Image (cartoon, rainbow, N blue to C red; front, side, top):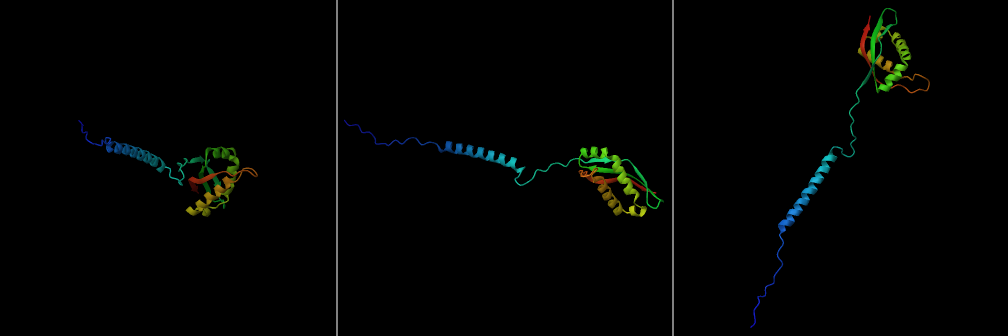
Length: 158
């Protein structure tokens, strides 16, 4: 007796593509999340952009009151001056040479007459002249001081 065996080609069972899609999906999510995180951290420091440091707080140095006779001998000037300097080390350098600073400024202020100081523009010019006097080196071949601004806190002509 011959047994008939069905000629069935048994193919191996098909693997589910569902598993493959899940694996690919996880890989894409991880790569996308990592790429997104990298992009977000790099966006703050884009290439070619310099990091902007916050500005340093100003350093002010008030000088003692100046009272001088103006040219012509009829009027006098009483003014308080404050210097804005780049750093506290400049204050120490200027304080060390304060007699020289005051002498320079007294000579400059007493060379003016009341009409020379009457307008706002003339006061701005005087501030520039004061800055030039203060920034001059205190000794031959010395370094100039770094003064950022000259501010008048009082200014009285009588």
